[in-house]
Length: 419
Image (cartoon, rainbow, N blue to C red; front, side):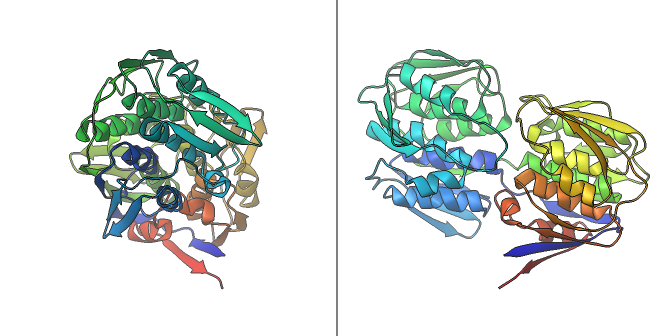
């Protein structure tokens, strides 16, 4: 069991290179199944969720080995179409393997995915779209038995722009005959990255980043070498860390166009955020002021994954900020832990009202989920004294070395691994 020790009250001053994006790497790892060849992913982050994806690939008969900061995957020997319940429960992104396995083998057996407990996240849209492409799906004992001897492209209209459903259907459509058009598709940058990976493997995919993605399936795919995009949520976390602690930081490789809404909120709160061709700089020299209402929404709206870290940055701001969570029903689980530090937060349904306080105190707090755990680290930077952050396994799902990164930015943060 590990814990993070963070001592606050120390302005930041430093720079760090932003890791590869978790939410890009995971669907790309599933997409390697389509190639039946070797793929080298450069800049791949070493995360718990990546480790789970590697174990899924190996359980399917594939090979996956680290070569420095690159991950080499060979899916030529894929010989299994079933993912165990244990592996499926470890992360919600495990469902993304369904479309790729169906496209490659014509059948797949999976159970429902797990991950952070953020409220209902059904995969109904995934299954509905796969059925429309020609998949027969029946549930037995909590296991989904899927068969698709002949996938056929068609127009798919999503009732809401689900990232996971968009990605899953893109992968399945690569193995379908004819053209598939996904309307009301999610527009996140990670979907653009998945498109670029598929194109590098020989697929005919266009439109990612817009609400309509077109896939002309049936093309033979091959391996490639690919570098994943930088993680915009990790970058948002460290921007908010600077806002909370004060000082100045530079985030190499971060792309402001991917987190424009976060940068805009920080500017309105009093930070100076600038970008150049190499990354993003943030400076904060005075106490923040309250931000305008923050309403999470699908991209290009304010990202739900950045809601908690921005809230942490504003705990000592002047005035009151209203947060409205419109993506997940249970995404304020970090609030109780922040109040242990002295934060003034009131929650009513999907709305959280944050009134800035003069002082926060270090405390023993518990990670409740991935982004909530990162937010506790951000809050601890602006608290007096030491905070002990427990159950850091949640954080390990999305951050390679959050303590090391914070130290590189000038923070007093260490990880303690207990026996």
